[in-house]
Amino acid sequence: MKLYIQINRFIQAVICLLAVSFLSGCVSRDISSLEDQVAEIMARPGGRIEPLPEIKPYEAYAYQSGNEDARNPFKLFYVISKPEITDDAIVDDGLTEEMEREIRNRNREELEQFELDSLRMVGTIDNESNNWAIVLDPNGVVHRVSVGNYIGANIGKVINIYEDRVELREIVQDSGGRWEEREAALALIEE
Image (cartoon, rainbow, N blue to C red; front, side, top):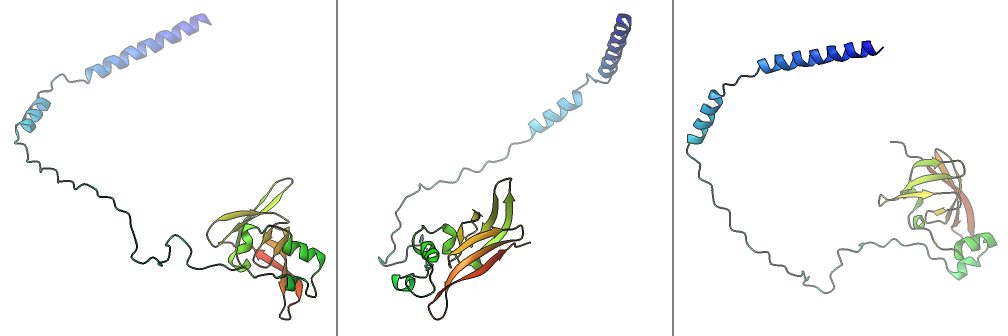
């Protein structure tokens, strides 16, 4: 085995020496044509370089609109209003204790400021213990919604999340002022 390794190394050394000798034979030591071309380029007259333009100094100023009552450009020019829920409406017929709890005794969630038809379901995320719907609001912000969250302006509580839709239970007032529950759904938008 040692003899085989020694012969193999000898053959590799011979091949390397042959390759180096062949490559060194390809090199030409005559660079006179290159030197002539460099001399010709250096003999050409230089071009005129234009002077740099004069740079005017920057003058900072604070913008003041001429009108004190002008609209602030950094605030929305429209207001999204939520339906007002008064105490008189809550004692109206048709309102159960559970509905009253959902209307009065909880903090509003972010997606409740938008109408349900302006929200878009764009997907779902599933793992072993949780199932979420991915919802896009009209401003282009993506939200993760799970069962028990509220979305839409009509107090829409998420009941079930499926791959193609989110099922909701909304609390709305009918034309007679009575509170009632209705089923709604937010379907997956496929593009």
